[in-house]
Length: 101
Image (cartoon, rainbow, N blue to C red; front, side, top):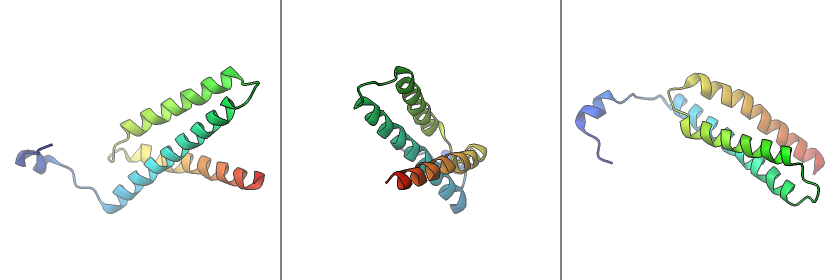
């Protein structure tokens, strides 16, 4: 994609901290998507699968994918929320996985 000179002047400059926070938020979303995918895989291997649980996980996966697509570097409120809330969920999942070992 070719960028015109007038567009360069209109482009926002981002700080390194903003870029790191954005990438961390993306990684949190991707990690939760991986967790959902793994859980869906586990459910697929069960004989007595709860259809409601599968639907809930599929919706969560779709919601996370949409959130990832729409996340923008300037959306600092969402980035902060994702890092806080999703980061906590990832840590809890990993802690539980370690105890089940």
